[in-house]
Length: 358
Image 1: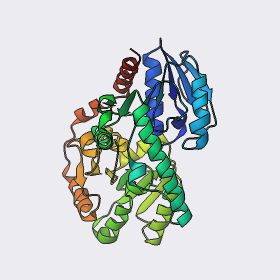
Image 2: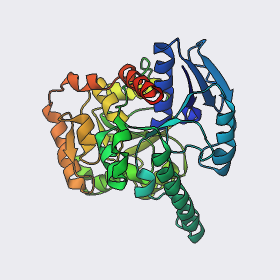
Image 3: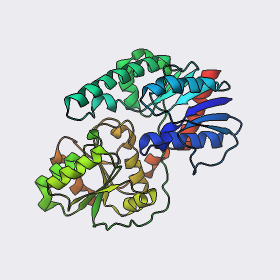
Image 4: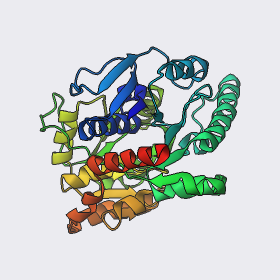
């Protein structure tokens, strides 16, 4: 069978890029008799060489008009493709072939990311309406919808109960990081680690509130490994203005080897997000046998089960209490990680493809 896969987001750091790259890697390795036509911004140099991939390079960016018109035409032009998989909700409206889509979360609706100007608000509101309309259309058009947690599945069903028969929950896998290499920057120990982008819903501001209130009782430093963008730079300025730069340290665009070292050497991972469709960093931390201090919200209780020190993400006092409990050495049940495998995710995805075509 011949499948199309829109892997342009593979070049993006974070969850969407990880999902596209890891799933494609497993699909192509597990199914050598299948053929994959793969859209990319640039052919990845670190991707295994397979005879069953035809790379199609395109400079068409996501979330724009060109994507909706020109990318759809490009996908339609791949005449041999029987089924497309778009690992996000941004399926081109001009795509005329059957497709499967993966839907990760409703965060773009729940947590606006416009700037504070009137123009910024109006621009975001226009995009929000377009995106919401496109999502509604694509949920209807998709032959099958993959979601990454039951939490997201229920969110979709509250919006569109008729989608129930099309939705399948396929959990993300756990990616094993490369061997740890000590960072070139100085690290103050002991420290708590935070990992992820700095969008408002990630709720890193609660750590500022925590230290303003309990600084004298907390000896640990906090390190945030994130990507450089306007959100992380704004957070860095807020930390500086609050005179907390000596306790909260932002590390931009760290390598995976540095990330592995930080996991190995941290006291615990702190994950205060207000909303997650899945949540990869907590599982990574658990794989290093590190405690996870997590916000009890959205999909996180489903994914982590009993393997976290929970707190209310709107209340820094509960975060303080959870951090104190880390020293009590909760016993980690490794079986929680066995549910999250990219090998299993790819097998389930391939079975879903087949159910569409036959």
